[in-house]
Amino acid sequence: MLRDKSLIPLSHQHQRALALCVRIDRAPPIPANDLQAWQVEIGQLFEQEIEIHFAAEEGVVFPAAERFSELVPLVEELIVEHGSLRVLFRQAEARCMSAQTLSALGQQLSAHIRKEERQLFERMQQVMNAQELKTLGMQLEAALKDSTRSCILPNKVTKLERAQ
Image 1 (cartoon, rainbow, N blue to C red):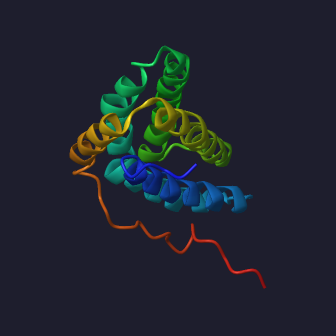
Image 2: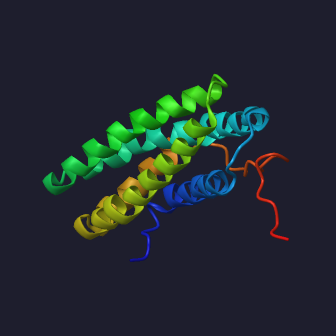
Image 3: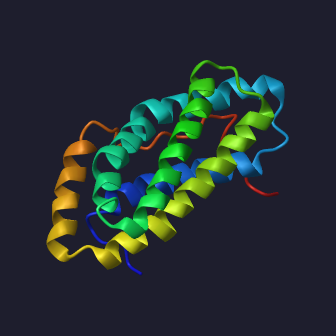
């Protein structure tokens, strides 16, 4: 199903976060001396985009979804996942992640995004009418206004190397 334009800003942010997940997944084994660089990038991404993204979902998307009883259990799962992901992002900000924790962040974030895209967003588009989706889009635009619109580029350590 095509993504409704009201949810596209979140989906674009999801794409950028998934790109990070792919780089984390393809990076192992990550040497201990490279962990700092990864954590700097992850902390920056969390501060400039993901933290605002989570707040927009929790303040706008989840309440809209919870109006439909069938979506309540899914929203509850996603809220718990936000909490677990915040713990991992805070570890990156504190520069106390291990290589295993970094890998766990990539896996958990990827699974979470896919659940939102494939389950929550798809179902919301089916149960909400055009006006509800339009209203949701306007509320999301306001909620996301403070997120950085620039792409955070991987640093020398965190970028994917070309296959030789």
